[in-house]
Image (cartoon, rainbow, N blue to C red; front, side, top):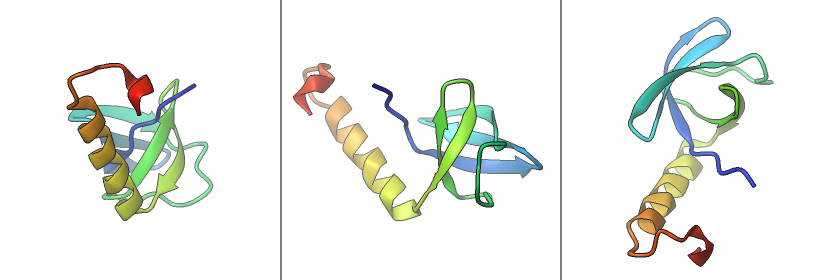
Length: 81
């Protein structure tokens, strides 16, 4: 199973982007995207640094808030979700 953390797009340069993922910036490829990506959008990234899906901003913020809530629990066991 893979858990993708919504990542906010900070810069776009042709088929590459710089994103913020949980406070860390990294470059990702946009080659798999079937829709345009702009600064401020949220994307999901698969292993190998390829963005593959754009998320609605509200959905992304909800997912991030839920992840923060779960990770703030005393038990680090994610099976408790």
